[in-house]
Amino acid sequence: MISIMQNNNAMTDKVVLQKYLDLPQGNRVQALYIWIDGTGEGLRSKTKTLENAPKDVSELPIWNYDGSSTYQAEGQTSDTYLHPIKIYPDPFRGGKNIMVMCETYKYNKEPTETNHRKICQEIMTKAKDSHPWFGIEQEYTLLAQDGHPFGWPKNGFPGPQGPYYCAVGAGNVYGRDIVEAHYRACLYAGIRVSGTNAEVMPAQWEFQVGPT
Image 1 (cartoon, one colour):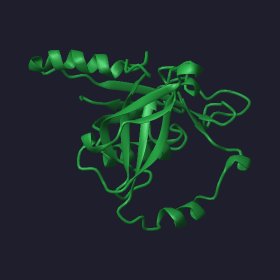
Image 2 (cartoon, helix red, strand yellow):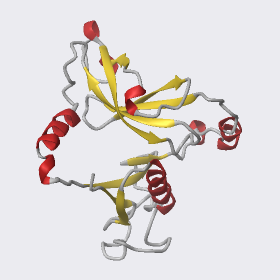
Image 3 (cartoon, one colour):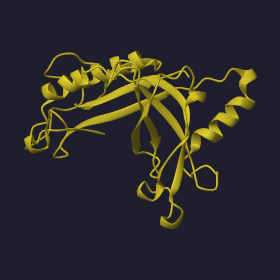
Image 4 (cartoon, helix red, strand yellow):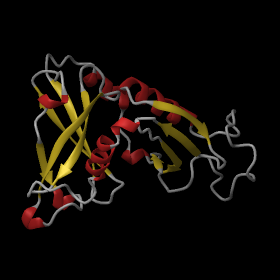
């Protein structure tokens, strides 16, 4: 589920931000390292400055973080390591900046319990002659900051199921701007997207990724 901020106290002026995002950064690159935390669902990230844009993921350094703060380590052995796996152009910062998808490893060089990609990659490598494909169907609901589904009446419910699935029009589809931004950001980054559509519940959407 994606929460949509509505509390003015938690908002910043994006016009002011853009002034600084437009400043030149020379040859330096912001590399946003991204990983899955110990819940198996939550995303975490930290940004590293590189002196030049890498030509290949092998040029990126292994980086570390405090795994005890992400449910991935105990306090006495909290060093956890990010192994860069894949580079994508960063659709949020733009320019030469990149997003770096990472696998996570414990202090003893063993994969963390939620590093399922490593096992998946080993299986896919063994089955590579069979040309395996897989796709991800991600369904999500847009929520306002108060936890209420976006666009729903505050003191009630929308009409019954029927007019919302694959629908058009502001009365039937809520949050399309967010979905369109999400879709375009993925295409910019080179993520293979099969498609998207509004789902059966207002503020619910489906996003298909793959085959990979």
